[in-house]
Image 1: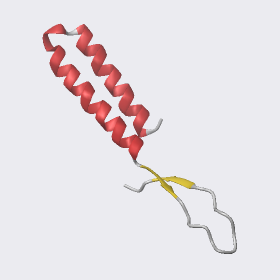
Image 2: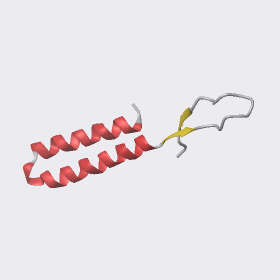
Image 3: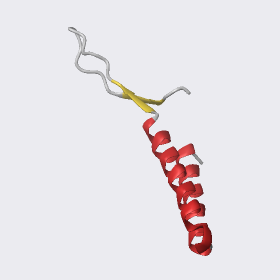
Length: 69
């Protein structure tokens, strides 16, 4: 399981807690939001690079790889 998916699962778990525990609903929703933000950060870590075309060759394909960190 990748980091983004794990964060989404955590967010779902906190949303379920919010539904099950109305007295602390806002606290659980705040936690769910934090995990959703982490999932968005994880999905932005992918890096795409584009190599400039050489004078002798046509454009090269785009290479995607995960960012380091």
